[in-house]
Every structure is written in C-alpha cells, then in structure tokens.
Image 1 (cartoon, one colour):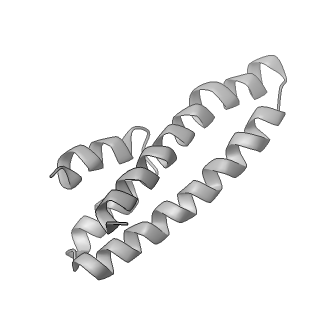
Image 2 (spheres, one colour; image 1 turned 45 degrees about the vertical axis):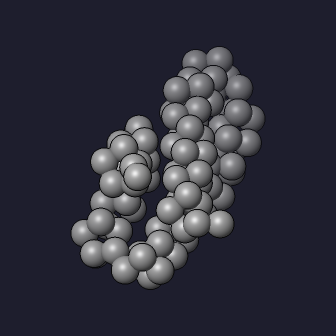
Amino acid sequence: MNPIKMLKTIGFLEGWSFLILLFIAMPLKYFMDQPMAVTIVGALHGLLFVLYALAILYVWNVKKWPFMRAFLAGLSSVVPFGPFIFDRKFLRD
C-alpha cells in the first residue's frame, strides 16, 4: 500500500474514533451513566492512535518529510478534527 494512502486511511479512522469518543461515548458515560461506551470506543481509539503515530513515523522515514510536517501530523492527532485538517492541507494529491 502507498504510505500516504495508508496514513490517510488510518488518520480518517483515528479522527472519527476521537470524535465518537468525545461527542458520543463520553456524554453517554457522564450524562447517562453508560461507561461501557467509553471502554469500547476508548480502547479502539487508543489502538488507532498508536497506529496513526506509527504510520506518521513510517511516512516520515519513507517520504523524507521535514520534521515540522511530521510534528504537525502528530499534533493533529490530539486535536478534534485534526487529522481531517492535516489531510486537507498536507496530503491532498
């Protein structure tokens, strides 16, 4: 698989898992006393976060990205909607 396409795919999944965690699972936990949603979505998001970080390192190495681009990719993973913004600004063909 193309490294950029892999990063985009994992970023898309990681971004959505973060939004689901923030806007669905956490409100279910704190307002409706349903903590299982955070347990499941949180674990999935954690896995996707690690995969996204590894994909960034892989693309940084293979594509010889400047440090700042790799840093911004990593920073985007901790900001809601960040992977989508990073994709639009830096990964469009």
